[in-house]
Amino acid sequence: MSDDDLRQEGGTSRRDFLRTAGLAAGGAVVGAAAGAQEADPLITEVQEWASATGEGVDATPYGMPIRFESDVVRRTVSWLTADPISSINFTPIHALDGTITPQGCAFERHHSGAIELSKDNYRLMITGLVDRPLVFTFDDLMRFPRENHVYFCECAANSGMEWAGAQLNGAQFTHGMIHNMEYSGVPLRILLEEAGVKPEGQWIFVEGADASSNGRSIPMEKAMDDVLVAFTANGEALRKEHGYPVRLVVPGWEGNMWVKWLRRIGVTHSAVEAREETSKYTDLMPDGRARKWTWAMDAKSVITSPSPQMPIRHGAGPLVLTGLAWSGRGAIERVDVSLDGGVNWQTARLAAPAQKFALTRFYLDIEWDGRPMLLQSRAIDETGYVQPTKHQLRAIRGLNSVYHNNGIQTWAVYENGAVENVELDA
Image 1 (cartoon, rainbow, N blue to C red):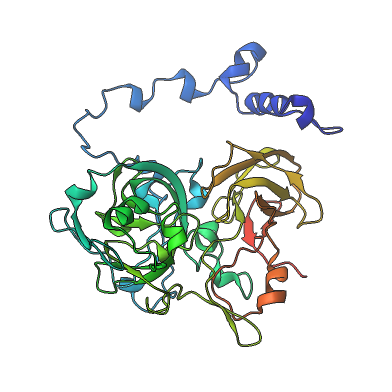
Image 2 (tube, rainbow, N blue to C red):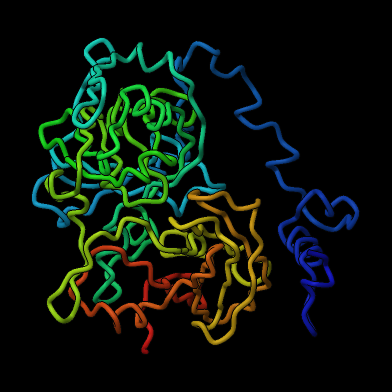
């Protein structure tokens, strides 16, 4: 985007603004030329951090973030679940950029707590309608061809507290039950072919090694397509809370299907035989019925900055709006951003070509005049699906739902830069 694109009638360009700001702050970049500004001591004087040597390379054998970023952490909501053993925390998406989620920031969801299972004690069984029932050790899995893919994992309850109205004041809490990591593992298809799936095997039932087992059924078509038996994320071993040493990765589908501490895969005739546990996260409809097998996560987006936890701190002038978009049905095609609550829309810039089943970062560079805004983002995926408003969702599903809320989020930005989660009238 050029300076001319950023220039408004009677306004200044981004470069002009930054030049003026530098003068006002006594910035050395232009202060020397102006000759009339007092120099910034952070530039002209030797600071403490430049007066002595720093830490050596052996100070932190496993690297940790610098202390100035100590607020970028997973957070919980105390009233959300009765017991923290079976609970959830939230990815600090408001404080991250790019698309890859560090493992230490990726949200957790447990049904009976995170367990410690060593590689030596790990076993994976494939049983049921197969020619050769098999048991794999961890070392066995490492001998199979592996793949690397970047995928998002979203809890079906992400944004669930917002069905009845604006509840939680922060993108971390409204949309933070999501992560996006590069997974490495063996395609499940290869392991099933090794066991020899019989023609009548149409479903698989998967279980974890934890106390809950979190049993789930998956249609054979999906199992043979893109499901991974994964053992690393972002290049390192899975964290304990993410299913170490092995978890299932089910691209585009709700997170409860991504069984952690993967222990057993049973090939069955049907979902009925597999206990019908294809999804425990049904959507209750106004007429008393429930949408059942809603596995794929629909297109969704959220502006992460500005947002309630990331207010505007510098006042009027150049402002970068940024956020995330994703779809469980394909790649993101476009993201639109509104500054006035959906009256007018502008097409945002995608940071990189969108990948299927992965988070996409978008940006919109604007000149903020200091007046209030109602920020929204709207994702469109490659199938042509357009992210709906909350009112459009409620018109179909009512107010009894908890899961699969992909409605458009609204942030109110005030003159002082503060940001709040708000609900617009229909």
